[in-house]
Image (cartoon, rainbow, N blue to C red; front, side, top):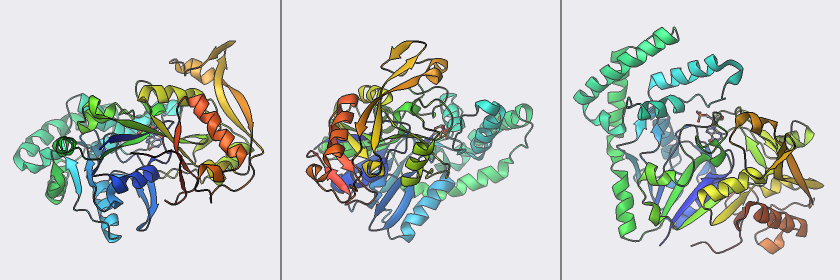
Length: 427
Ligand code: IMP
């Protein structure tokens, strides 16, 4: 039985939610290992339409145990809201477990995210404002508070006193903001601890046992490779690694145990927030992709920046993640175009680049070099087999395989589960 990872190959919002929801039908364990409620995984199925932020998209599977791993940062308010919404739709929460080692997003993290963004002025990252960066900063700075800490009220009181005292100094002295009252934060989080206690586990051991029993484990990534703090468009990135390797650290999966890595890519490119995006189209083509694809953020509602498929970023992320296959989503959004472009290289200062340069200034100057392919101008939403696709759409898929250097295993032609083509048999 395999361990399969599903990660985003671009700048996030690739449609990981649908792919995980589909694959989770066969999974025994589904685990999130990075990010927080900055993610918005859209799933449409028999229970309704959901934008999941923290709970794994495998939650709808009748049998999968769903884990929020230690690598995820948790805002208890957002989590409880999500649990309540899912329960109201009849989804069983008895199989959800949260790592006792997962760090918490505290109220000061959300305040600091917004204050830090405001202080960046025109260089603002365009964060989701959910406190993600400050929470991961505190984890590394050893100032974090973890899910398990809430279960011991006395130890938590001491820890919060120390941390809040420090954070209030930053809020008041650096940003001139109001301090947060200890009693209010303490009592609110003690209550969260009591409400969530039944969900808290050593989730890495749940995975270890599943591996021992050779069970099917699905690792659900969040965001996309180009938002990675090391390999993405730094500093316009998120604060935890969206790469497959992060599953080892953020869920406790040994590196030698991951059998397959599925990279989810849209048939074009989108990005939310600031930072370079070489194939961005600030013209009617970009607008058309945005409107056809309803490209507005599932978490913040912000319009997404849209452009042609960036094969330079895509092949780079395929290598970094060691992809064994691609899940290509939203092919149907390109149905109306007469001709479609695929970026195969960047050019800047007279030089050609086949990988994204690490220098932000250089990347910002990069112009895309395009290969033109004919469009198909026919609806693809009803295709259920690769050969049902118009010839030009088949050619487009083959072009992307060549450019990314990886076979396409799944093609999605609509948000619903049934609008899916399995090109090759998955484990
Ligand atoms: P943060 O993760 O909220 O700190 O935001 C940092 C950057 O990552 C911003 O550009 C966000 O728009 C982007 N980002 C974070 N989460 C997602 C996501 O799930 N999809 C797309 N972009 C995201």
